[in-house]
Image 1 (tube, one colour):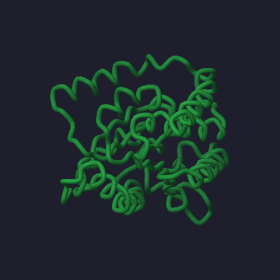
Image 2 (cartoon, rainbow, N blue to C red):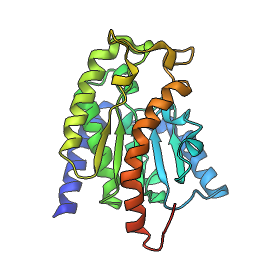
Image 3 (cartoon, one colour):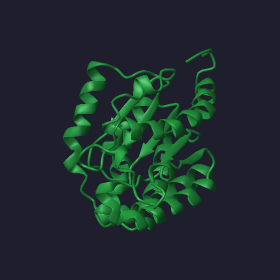
Image 4 (tube, rainbow, N blue to C red):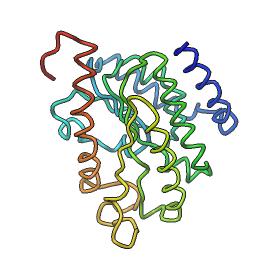
Amino acid sequence: MKRLTILLTLLFLSFGAIAKDADHAKWETDIQAFEASDKANPPPAHAVLFIGSSSIRMWTSLASDFPNYRVINRGFGGSDLDDSTAFADRIVKPYRPVAIVLYAGDNDLQGGDTPEQVRDDFAAFVAKVRQDQPAVPIAFISIKPSVARENLLPKIEEANKLIRDWSMQQKGVAFLDVAPAMLDKNGQPKRELFIEDGLHMNPSGYALWIAQVRPWLADHATAAEVKQNPNTTSK
């Protein structure tokens, strides 16, 4: 019954995604590059998977930022949230991660998606990956406020609220709210957190994300790894 509920939820949520954009083929080159890399250098088992758009792809310091964990980076720049769902069978399922950290959403809003669509796309991602791993912990890093997309701040705030509210009703789903620390006293994005394009972050910006992700991993990745691999005594 539980599996049937997940399947029905995924099918229901997928209708909106399909109506919005049924063509994910533009990312095929990126996905094939991941698969080629996996074949040449098999990724570590019992790893934490970081997946999503360019803010994940450009997080090149993951291994040093989280030295106590094995990590896999599967960010592909410019992607929407539903792109990660579309390719989950190829860049999530094979790794059987002990935990998943997802960042996406601002490209979606920039492209015209509503906050409700972004929330539903996250729900579809959770349903998709949990078809294979029903108990995998999943964290959503809140959509960041950025200088380049200040015009989206109201939609970002609404989307974050909807995702936070939905996540609170789910088991093993967390909403990591990085947005407040990225805003100044006037509620505007802090310019010092971004590189020249005003959209992507510098190390100071990522430091704020690390401060949110690290304690979540401490609470979830260790327990998940021990459960999946009882012989593990340390990471």
